[in-house]
Image 1: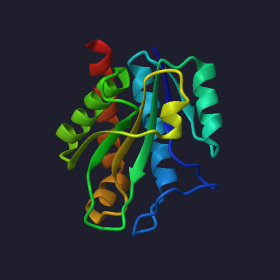
Image 2: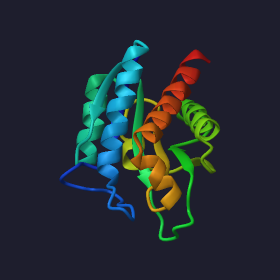
Image 3: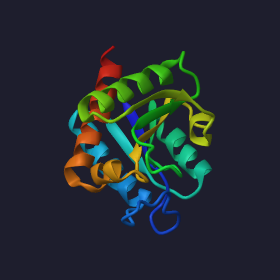
Image 4: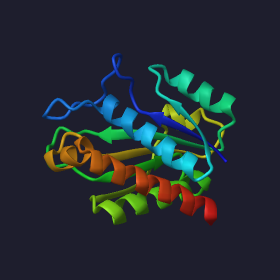
Length: 174
């Protein structure tokens, strides 16, 4: 199975959200993308890593690769420093993408104990313009001090990626 992994935002061009300590979303998602790709390859999936500044370029690369699943990995942010947890987005919950989103969301929340903000529907560009089931994962809030600690730590990132990989393998095995 071919899986396109998009690290949200682009180091050096678009930092994405920035935590209180200066931690930049683009660098966190770059690391998460690389780790996830590595673990999925170990499980015999074929992956492509895409971290571009242009949304259409991200979708074009995924489509040209022939991706059968598309994941866009992000760190959430909010004005309220109290907002925390994990949420996973898809175009519609009654779809293959919705099923994939539920598996991933469940694994992250149960494995890491993050606040379950649920599977949600949105019309993000990358979800609308990829040719396969696509999800956008907001792993944790970089604007929340507890979540930022998780995102900043090597172990926290590894735990997040293992949970996403388990969600994917659960989805594929269904």
